[in-house]
Image (tube, rainbow, N blue to C red; front, top):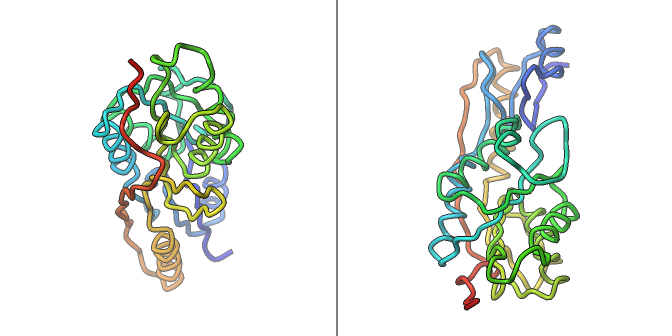
Length: 234
């Protein structure tokens, strides 16, 4: 193996990174923790998550729920409390958690075991079900990925809620999801092609005996049809 690319980054005491370093294999990290001597290709996901929440706040939402990416190796599903929040290891998760809280403290934060539509659906079903009167229910959900957000839209439909008239949903990634029609997600778009290209260029540089620099790529919020003004529940 000439070079290894750790697309999901690294975790604390990461056995994969340790094994590669023992073997002297050069490494490129995608969206992970900084490692001495290792180039990292990341995106400004903390700022992006904050922009998504700020968009919801500007629409009048104050009861905003959060559906998160997996925290680490012990993938689980359930409510996130203060102790659990401190246990987040995956860099995209930590950044997006921080970005949300740069703007507002979510009324509910629900952790998922994977970035899959079904996990977003399950989380949103828990968040939006009749656990409280309608006036106390979250009026918006910010999800850490578009697949989780798409699941939230599906759950809202199944519960008889209109998106965005009854609940707004925002995601992250900028994926093309034609099967979600007629809805188009409001989402933080990350430069997926450019990220892959930057990882490839770092590999080429390492193979040439060079020391590539870390790269941080910008993101942008693109409004779709799934976010709207806070509903009047008076």
